[in-house]
Length: 402
Image (tube, rainbow, N blue to C red; front, side):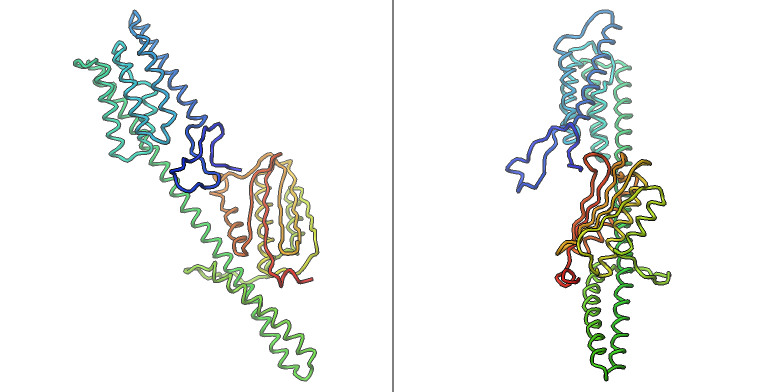
């Protein structure tokens, strides 16, 4: 499961002054990727500096300048957390290296990475200021506080402008993509809730119709107390279910729902899992079904939730688990809850948010489970594959049913 810390990251716990600690919260200092970028940029600058010395005919780079050049890559480890401060330290160290060097016009990789990080995360004003400071520092240091040559005067500002423009454009594109992804996720949640509301509406309407029929049957058989008693018991049970499911309906229903033009159809439930498993087998995914515990009649909304979770989980398994994968569906009737587990052993693992349109299928599962006050856990299996596990509580009346 995703822990929120990239592999190879160096992290520390929050300091006491950071407020109440939160479970699993860590402050990432730098990641393995940051270290690789810093080392790579330093190597490029060192090679470039040595090449410039060789082209100059005689070595003019002092040992102190060479060390400053290497040390200037260290602030890149903090470029994600504090890009402006990282750039400032890089400018100081690189400026010192340039002052101790031959003064050959150049714009190093370390400086480019630091400026790019600022431009990607900053606004237009911050980006422009950082680019101007970078260009000015490079011109002054490389000209050794003398009148700059036209090569220095042109190369440093042009390079800083190109890097800043590229970083700002990429950062803006990233922010737009994140905003669009958030909007799509919100829309998917709203659509799924409307769908759940329509399904709950059909179920509640069924119970109300049953109540009406039972009431009419009781009125027509007043002379037969046993028939009237059975009708009243059914009427009471349907009324209790309709009231509870109507409350659930009001919790998830949202204004502005468009009317469903499709004719109502009977909603599937837990007893239809055999059909789902058979469909999955015909689609090419070997699937097994195991039911443990004492089966009992489930409320239609709960049975529909079980059915939809299995349907979505098997669909994802067929898409992402791989051609040689197998899937299993396990439904356990416990005393006070249902435990539903769907897992596969394919090498494909978990479907990525990018591949599933933001993970909207998992969002739908969570919405359905939340309606019943249950919990949902999803994630890759240690040996390969993916697991979906839902725990759905049963009310005392539902648990007592045979």
